[in-house]
Length: 387
Image 1 (spheres, rainbow, N blue to C red):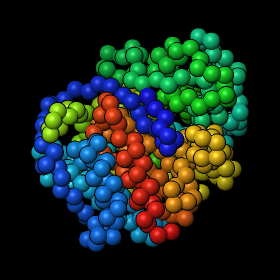
Image 2: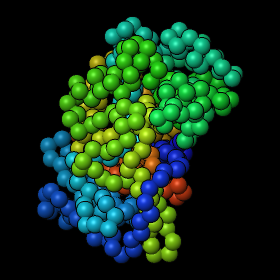
Image 3: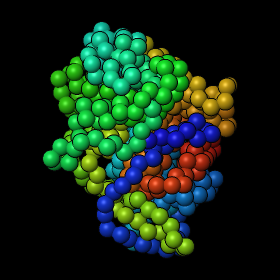
Image 4: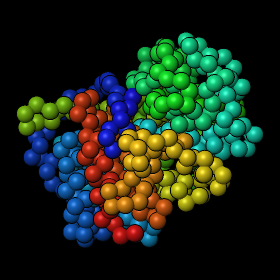
C-alpha cells in the first residue's frame, strides 16, 4: 500500500470508492484562510505557500496545525467540502489512514510488557499456524519484525479478501489475503511496508485481550491518553463523525477537478493498519504523548525508537516500531507517520523539543500522490517554528 519516496516518507496507494461525481474549477479553490491566530498567515507565509502547493497536487482543500509546546497555529487553503467555502479546521474529523499503525503499535507494546511477551518472541508462539503458510516461517518472524515491517511480507494494497455478507472483513481474512504473496525477503533483512504485518498484530491484540481490535485499542491507547476526538470505528461503522472534513478521490481534466466523495468507507478494509478517525489537534497530542514519554514506559519508548535505516546510509531517516524517524532540513529529527486511504492523505511529525506539525489534504489521488509537497509543508512548518 506504500511507496518509498527519496525523503524516506511513505504514503498509501489504495484504489476504489463510490460516490457522487462533483466538479469545481481550480480558481474557486485558490483562496487561503487562517483561523487562529489572525496573524498566522503573515507569520507563516512559507508554510502557507507550501500548503498551497500541497493543495494544488491534492485538494480540494488542505490544512495544517503546527506550533511549539506552548502555542499552536493553523492554516487552511481550499475547502473541506466541494462547492462550499468551508475551511479545514484542527478539530474536524478525517480518516488518518496508516497513522493508525502507530495506535496499533502502542497497544502491542503496552500489552506485551504487561503480559510477559517479548518483542523478539516468534509470532508462532502466540498465533500458532497463522503465519506459517506459503513459504513463511512463524518461528523466524518475530513480533518486532511485524512492528518494523521487516518480516519479509511484501508491500500490498487494497485487499482482495473475502468479505462477510455485511461487506466487512475479519482480521483472519485480511491476513490470509496478504500472505498469498510469497516472501519478499528473509525476516530482518529488509524493510517491506505491508499492511499485513499490522493485521497480524491486530490478531495478537485480540488474542491477548479477548476483545475486538477496535475496542482493545480504544481501551489501551485512545482513552488513557484522553483523545476525545479520536475514534477506532468498528467494522460496518462507515461514517465520519461531524464536523467532518469530506474526503474525495479525484482526477484532473484541464482546469477542472473532478471529485468522487469517499467519506463513507468500510473501516475493516484496513482495520489495524488504517481504520482510525481523528483530528489534526488529536493526532498532534497523540504523537506528542509518545515522544514525551506519556504513552509508554521508558523501556518501551526506547524500543519504539530503535530504527531500521531507510534511504541513503547516514540519512537520519528510519522506521522504528510503528513510527518513522525523519531528518529535518533545518537540523534535528522528527517522529511520526503518514497515511492515505480513499479520501484523505495526512501526516503528523513532532520533535522532542515540542514542535509539531499535522497536515491533511482531503483527496486521495490514484496517481501522482503529492508526497514531496506533503514533506515540504510539514518540514517548513517545523523549521519556521522557533524551537
